[in-house]
Image (cartoon, rainbow, N blue to C red):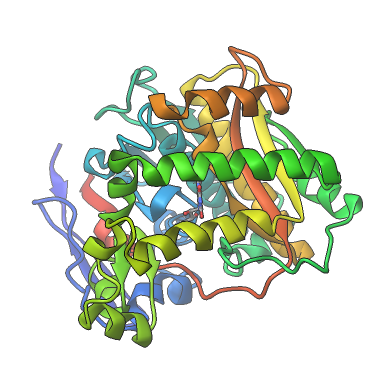
Amino acid sequence: MPTRRMILTTAGAAAAVTATGAVGLAWAPGGAEARAPWQIAGESFGDGRLDALAYAILAPNPHNRQPWLFQLVGEHQIDITCDLGRRLPYTDPPDRQLTIGFGAMLELLVMAAAEKGYVVDIEYFPDGEPQPRLDQRRIAVVTFRVGARVPKDPLFQDVLARRTSRKPFDIDKPVDPATINQLIEASVHGSTANGTADAEKRARLIDLARRGWIIEYENDATRRESIELIRIGNRAIAETPDGIAIGGVTMGLLNMAGLVTAKKLDTPGAQAYEQGLSSYIAQIESAQAFVWLTSETNTRRDQIIAGRDWVRLHLAAQKAGVAVQPLSQVLQEFPEMAAPYAETQSELGVSAPGVVQMLARVGYANSPPPSPRWPLSSRLIDAVA
Ligand SMILES: Cc1cc2nc3c(=O)[nH]c(=O)nc-3n(C[C@H](O)[C@H](O)[C@H](O)COP(=O)(O)O)c2cc1C
């Protein structure tokens, strides 16, 4: 098939999709650019598919790796594949969490397309389900068609405001059961959503989450996978707007002064290492309630569905003014996690082949700034006529 050169020009951002594949030609380092995709999502890109993708890339996804690659095919189709270099082999050995992120992205794609009057048909894994890990086969083929009366989704209004919160939650502000229900009811695609603010169950889940975190952090391979993805200071974030962003001018200075560096974060006893450990524990311990998603089997399709439901739950939380943070450590499939993994599945009433796909703390906290994103142009590969 011939390759089509396509130029996107919008909101001052110019990018080209060239015959060589994915590039973000307009990407220049600088403070605000890392968040620009949140600003320009409502612009018109001259193609309904790009308009929808501009929102889809704002989806929650593990370690903010943004592993999606999009290929426009003909006039109506998008083929979606995984950038295999962006997987997380130590913390996510079967690419389960990564696949959930693809599901969240697809849900936002559907919502954004509906806003413009498109119905989206999705075929999941048209070339077969990749196991035991994702591979170069397509994750989904998406087809846009104009619908007569396409219902808009009220949750779409919260897409630009949605955040993952890593602040300690207000310990004087419990989450009431009615609010938890609102979150749970947003999950409609087939995962089972559940939640609790019950003091005893909450204490048991806090204990499990804390144990899971300590295991992940004290295990060299899993800790290092995260450390390698930490971007310290605004410049690093602007240059590589994915991974775990620790932003701000102060952080940049502490980094330059050698106080907060990847090496210090990896050195037990160093202040940066100990703070990394304790700050996440503080987040866990301030959980006012928990929500979780389970599925009856653990196929790739189930994981996609969990992602679609997860982002809906998260958007419903945003609408209700409740902050959310997934706490995934204890759901991870690396061997050292096996004991608390099994206890968590059993605590949440799940047995094989069922699986807990997402677990998150909820509570109240001020909203953080949006997390960085690569520009859409950098996630597009050669369009095909
Ligand atoms: C499957 C999955 C697992 C995640 N696990 C965690 C986690 O354990 N801890 C955490 O702080 N955030 C977790 N997140 C949130 C992502 O880090 C977050 O979505 C990403 O950094 C982008 O930020 P945003 O959600 O504010 O746009 C997870 C998200 C997904 C989809």
